[in-house]
Image 1: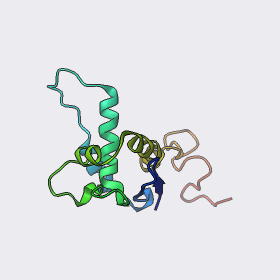
Image 2 (image 1 turned 90 degrees about the vertical axis):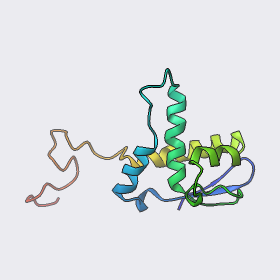
Image 3 (image 1 turned 180 degrees about the horizontal axis):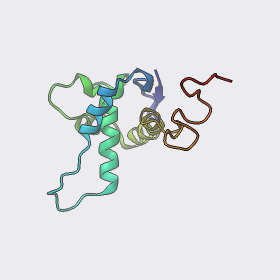
Image 4 (image 1 turned 30 degrees about the vertical axis):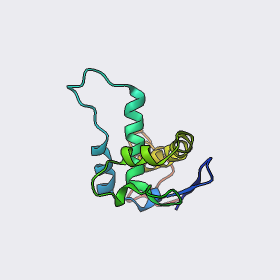
Length: 131
């Protein structure tokens, strides 16, 4: 479980990307939405929503009182995080969360659509000997 030490000295524990189920990822994707009827939105705001949705699912423990969004019954993750954390702490947590989000989304995995075969480079293709 990744632990992030924040500039304030507080810590936040995040759920390991290996512990997510596909259903968790689908639910996370549903959290960050763009309202097509909204007059405008900022790309930064959309990224913040994506990070806060991830943090809402991922924060499992921390030394900041009241910071675990998954334990809240009413408030959205961005509201809980926004009212609990100092800006520098959130920025540090965001920076630590981005590589975990990429890992969860499969960044760095082989491209399964390349011509090296359906299993990708370096992986055995079914019915072929490994080696």
